[in-house]
Image (cartoon, rainbow, N blue to C red; front, side, top):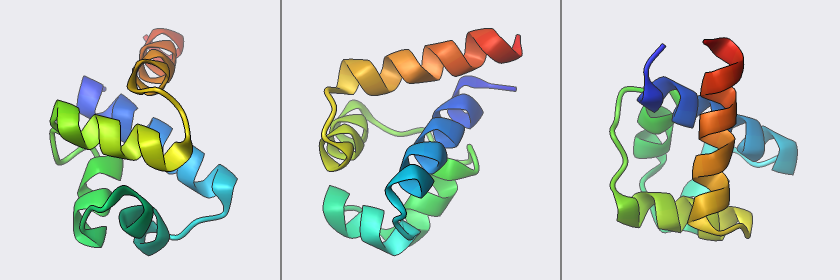
Length: 77
């Protein structure tokens, strides 16, 4: 599994934990809903700006979002 896939799984997990649809997360992060789906499926490679927008939507710093991604990757390796 690649880094994009791990990041996407973390985003999906956090979104579902909040009880949000992809559309709601997209609105909160000022992103396109279809792009959220691509991120969650590991198809898209999010930029640092996108990481910051997603982190802001979840109310965490970008470093915390990336740390969750690293933890997910290390648990699945």
